[in-house]
Length: 189
Image (cartoon, rainbow, N blue to C red):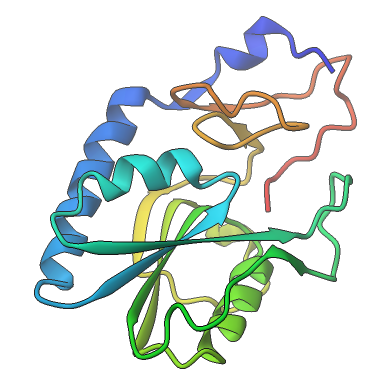
C-alpha cells in the first residue's frame, strides 16, 4: 500500500532527538547495572534499530537474546492470543534481564513476555522502551526506562512499521490516514 509523501513528513521525534535520548538511556543503564551481569532481550522486529543503537551506548559486558511474538496475525488490531515465534530456554536463569521494546501501548505483549520470563527464574526483570503510549494501557506493566512518551497516534519509522514498511526511516513520524489507507489504525501495539 502506498503512503502519500506528506504522511511521511509529519515527524514526531527527529533523528537527533532519538540519538540524544539513546545516549542518555545508555549512560543510565550502565550506571544502574554497574558490576552486574546483564542480559538484554530484544523484542523482534520493531525494537531491532533501537536495540542496536542502545547496546553501543551501554558500557558493560552484555549478553543478547532475541524473542519474537505474534499478536496481530496479519490484522491491524491485536489479537487476544499472543504466541512466541522464537523463544529460548535457560538463557536468563539467575541473571538481571532488561527487555528492550520499541513501543508499549496496551501492555498486553509486555505482560505476556514478563510472565514468561519470570518462569525462567531471572534475578530481576526490567523494561526499556523507546516509545510509551500510557493513554492506551490496558495491562499493568512497570516500565523502568522510557525514551519518549507519545500521544495516541499511529507512528512509523525507526523500526516501527505499517504493513512491514517504513521501518528504515531514521525518525519517528505520525502516519495520518489518507484516501488510500483509510483503514489505517489510530495506534500501535
